[in-house]
Image 1 (cartoon, rainbow, N blue to C red):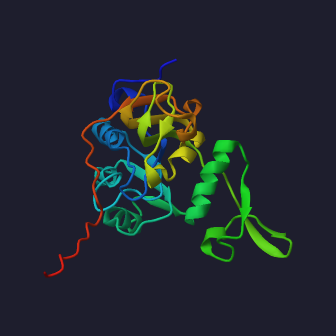
Image 2: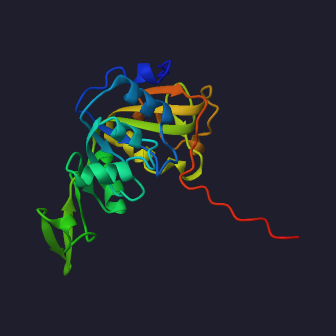
Image 3: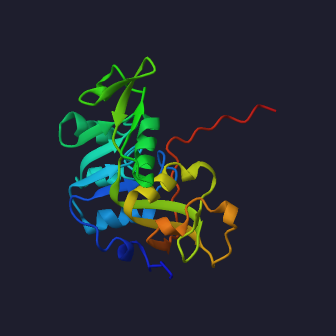
Length: 234
């Protein structure tokens, strides 16, 4: 059955206030640009954002901070995001920081049906406060819970009508894990290709984990910090 929808508006028609929203991307790389713009347009409120970082430099998910649509952020990085920093320090937005590997593994645990996992990362720090600590072979480990979402918005290079996805390089980052861990996964793709156009070995996310897919256009692909060097003098 085809999972193709017309656009981000149709894909996110059932988003609701207070939803837990997973968002793929690392910095501004691999952001689901059309879905983020639709979230801003529809004005959904009190979102819990589950993302490595909540946008950057006023772009990406940070546009939803500017419109005060976010209530909580679960991620692993704040730096470079003055909007999140300001709202976190003022108490306007609750922020839960995770070590990046723990963050990824919590999402994977939800996707594969695990009830949690023990890790040595964070033992003896604020990360472990209020969590079970267990001695395993003479070393302390902290119990981390799985992390799931109501929706996941991810962006892929190519996708087919059944939702099979192929990513370009490291832009896949957290997206395959989030597709597994969310109740509804929405994929926007740069190229919507016919069935069979993606070789089986190139499928990073099988279509069973994707509920809706659409083709995006005119991507901005912003660069956080453009760094150049002068041409050597001849």
